[in-house]
Image 1: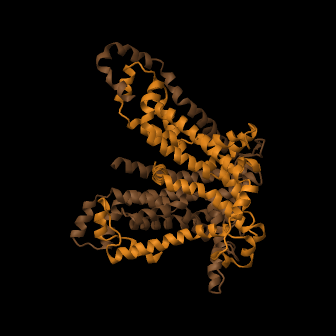
Image 2: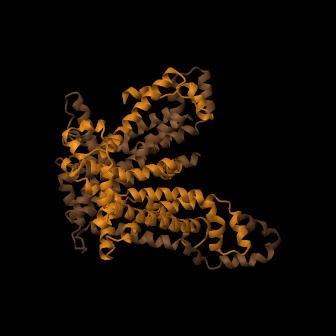
Image 3: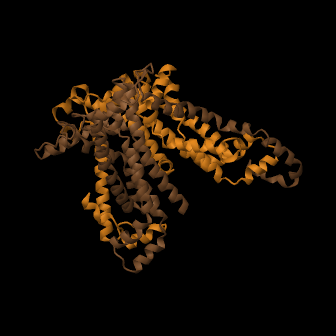
Length: 310
Length: 298
């Protein structure tokens, strides 16, 4: 098709000129291409976004928009110990998962950055969990952690011991959720690091080899500086992603015991969809939005800087 | 993890292989240790999966006596036969197929049209509109979730397929991706077609769209996988059992782990739900990895 279109212009250029202008004449008509998306975008993203802010200033339930209460919902959040706990839990979870994902992802990428069949198979294994849904991931990990008949309990049982109560000990539940999450999400950081490693020109390593640079020095002075930006990018992407923790916490512990594993999104979900206090939920989601926006802006700046240098 | 520290830096020898077509693993002792540790970690990684598969193949009465029964015969496929007979899994798979399929097709159509429009055509407020759409990338689902839910309540769209599909169509990522892609196509192509007196739509449809197939594949896989695995919106919108997506449906079965309820049956449902996507992954691994990591970097 492209060929046919290309072959003709030379000899027909002159008479076609007028028609080109014809096509361009009604400019607004060109907007028809973007219109379908814009309608959906405005109706289901822009309007709900503004509406959400408006809702956060109201005492609303499922069907009515309620009455205006000013910043009362935000004041209620400020005075709600559980909301602060949920924010703390979310940050704790980000702290547990993001460094681990970045470091383990990088180590796997370094170990598997070769063209052998073994490396390919192992890459397949480490990325495989990423395609599963949160429901299956939590089902798998609950059956690992669950006391009595879980995988851990069975393995511990061989030695006549009982495993730590990962899903009920307040000190351990977040760690259990973090382990399941790292297992689920490790594929993406690994793949991002792998593609960064493959951009490093091989001759730099050849030079290092000639200099007899050892493993650590090669990593420290060649690999690490070359993938610095990817590292920052992976960290920021994961912060935004892990900040939105919901399914794992809901399905593995439902926020318990005593709210120690309740993240912000679960707080929002419960406020809005189990207590049907939509105003409070909306206010909490605006707080979450601002926190994610900060991380997203960092991501934008980082990836733009990356684009400029390329 | 600390035992993996040695994995940090590969030897110069295998680093040389890195850029070259033939990497070498297991060349030096250090490489062998790294490989061994990585394989060990891979086994740990797979152990929970294998545990679930093994449980799904056991008779429940045996499991109630001792979990060690998992490690020896007899194994049975009875749990899977029970799924075929009684479970709602099929309905949920159908729902997920409709929702993920509809969302994928819709996203591809809307994003391609809009991407072409933003990349190639001139119209009033084009740049302002594009910037607004880009800003939409930063809006997390949670910030619009509650208002959307209320809107859909009023429109009576909950527990319908459009109700499950529509919110995903407003995501700006596809438009962003397609605009980038259309911009990368040489302008001479559409200019030549324009001289041929082809309409804008014809140029889009016949000349440019076929060239965007790789981007369509990336966006399509990413959208489908995301919709298939989505949990939050289907959880609050599709609340009737017959409108559960697979993700929500499987979650609803796992509220109680009491062995009497049939641990093996529960696990077989999980395997049944997870296996198709894992098998697809094995076949289309390259595309899936590209789609997911490409989407993450934007």
